[in-house]
Amino acid sequence: MRRLFVLLIFLALSGLPFYYAYSPLPLPVTPFEFTLKQGSSLKTAAKELHQQGLLGSDWAFVWLGRWLNLATQLKAGNYALEAPVTPFGLLQIITSGDHSQNQLSVIEGWNFKQLRAALNESPDLLHDSLNLTDAQILARIGGVETYAEGLFYPDTYYFAAGSSDFTLYKRAYQAMQKRLQEAWLARQANLPLQSPYQALILASIVEKETGTPADRPLIAGVFVNRLRRGMLLQTDPTVIYGLGEKFDGNLHKRDLQTDSLYNTYMRVGLTPTPIALPGMAALQAALHPAQTDALYFVARGDGSSQFSSNLDAHNRAVNRYQR
Image (tube, one colour):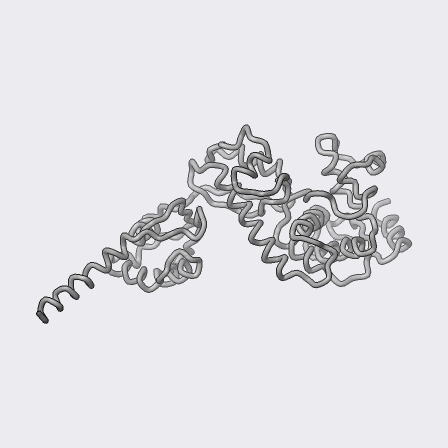
């Protein structure tokens, strides 16, 4: 009886590696993206994948890799998993160099029309959204909003050739949702913003008004001060956005005097939607504006801005830098 018990224990233990090696790993998100840096060890890679939620046990994955003599054969690169994979399959992927080679960069300050154009022009994507409206694209990727502007996070996205453009739309949408919620929860107290969406609107305006990165918090501070006082925001990028195809490259006085939902020279408060895709720096600036008494700013012509706390000082700055 004792010999039989020992034999059963031996058989059970000897089967454990096979059970683990061929048990599917659920993906934390779909697709699941990760990067193996040049020189990464199997132990380091396993720890990072465990922290990202792919591996339930980093040591078991390391043990399997060593058992299969694959521990020293990792290939650096950017990887994207579109479906659940077994630990054995994952080892095959990261040791064969079967990683994503294609990439697409979404730039801070783009509008959604520019994002669509970039995806439509990529020869490595399937253009499944080509004939759909913006609202239909949002619906297909699970968005609950009715207007697409501002909802997609600017970043560089890696993908396998032949992927659907919906894959990138969904990833960029989910990335913005995640970062916006995290930033909103950590926001400065007593801001004149009622929701994460209003923060996104303000961040998009800050993004379009910023020429020098160091000015972002100050620009946000000016707009926050104006919102608190019920002042007009009076920002050109919103008017330009409202003009759409009618904008000829020059903003005219008549444009500032023509009412529209996006004319912040005539309407108090934020615009009804974002006007661009803001990056993380703009989100942080909108939710952590500089403590300033400035109510005005004007471009100096070198990318930076001159800030003023009263209209007389602002007019002097305009005369100096703009006239």
